[in-house]
Length: 543
Ligand code: G1P
Ligand code: ZN
Image (cartoon, rainbow, N blue to C red; front, side, top):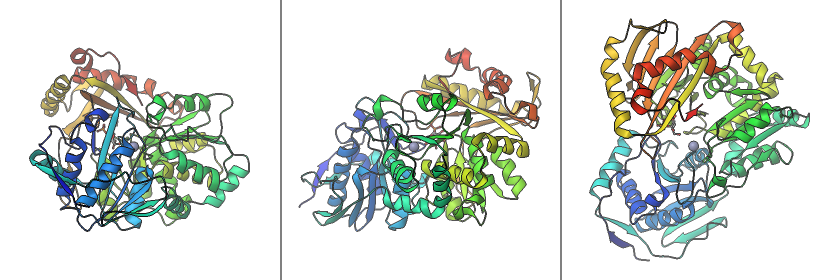
């Protein structure tokens, strides 16, 4: 089988964002588009010759075709072996786990996470390193450089490989191992958590609903929650991965997981509700009549992780992305743990995890995880919650009430303005950025600004610096507003405004965050001139 060398030219805009390269599916399906990017990955990692990779994706439209192209390109460039999830499926955390367990040279994950899928929606490709984590900035920079000077790529001609059957096969000299996407991951979960206690709780009548949102976690949730933990039929819904995710956004938040929210807020609510996203790395947690915000969930997990066997010895330290609420910091302070503040994006946790500085970390965008893999992990968060409920005997609401009573409550919300004109958004950020120095001391709606900056992060492990990571306005009363432009959107710009206000007054703990944050919302608009500049009088999404 002789590799063909196909001449090509650089294609504009092949720049990975917060999490890999994400574009409209039709863009990815365009001539040479996927091939150019894959070849540029090979260049960025110093070639793929002799290497072993993991390959899988979230099952979205074009996932199956892209897998065939990637396999043919890997074979053409001399890869030794590719371990592929059956039907080209692998959740992001399961891929991270396989890379680590099989000690491969990295892996390619085909996913646009929680973005919708289909011919008119989104597709994405990301490369994960031998540690199982997303490629760091120096590697993605090399990818971008390679895309800008590419002249040719190599590919072999062949029939499609049958990825529906498990087992070993070959493409030219390259080995292909089609594996069960679930088993190794489920075994890992069983090592970390007290499956016996969770199983007993479920057998005792504890009820749950997991919404897989027609995405990749369906088979994982059925195997783990159903088969291994005994949750009855009907506990896992929308469990079959579909190329268009049933037409919805596979994004586990109260807007897109509305059916689950309605169920959990109704009279017949089960004890526990949860959902995960397209590629299985995000999570949403809901109790009976009680939605748990991701920032709160992270803080609760940090405070209670010791209930799970995998974390019984305590945590080395914790970390959160900068915009995530500082509820975690309060737990860290009380428990004497180091707490790191990193830029948005999971890749920034990698060094801290590898260096043994932290055990647990998370982001406000429904991502939580630990040092068991190098990605955030939706089902992991669900299982840790179940483990905590099983060991404490508390309901979700009781866990939250006790948490706030001990640490106070950081009211928190993120407001997203989607598809804003990119220049308008950039200018708004630049103008506010230029005023930051003058803001401290200024009082607005009765709140005084304590400090303001443009967040930059110096990685304590490798000394690298990431600047321009979001504008932070801190208030004397503990409140905070953060402005950031999304790095994952595919249309125009998405402005994210992160709002936070702290209360240690128990009478307020039951308030709706949007009410508790009303002042901060008004201040955020006034400071940046959001309505005036964008014409939007309300965000598209509040989480
Ligand atoms: C968003 C989230 C961020 C997360 C990323 C990938 O990025 O805000 O926390 O790591 O998706 O899932 P953003 O669009 O804000 O750049
Ligand atoms: Zn995701």
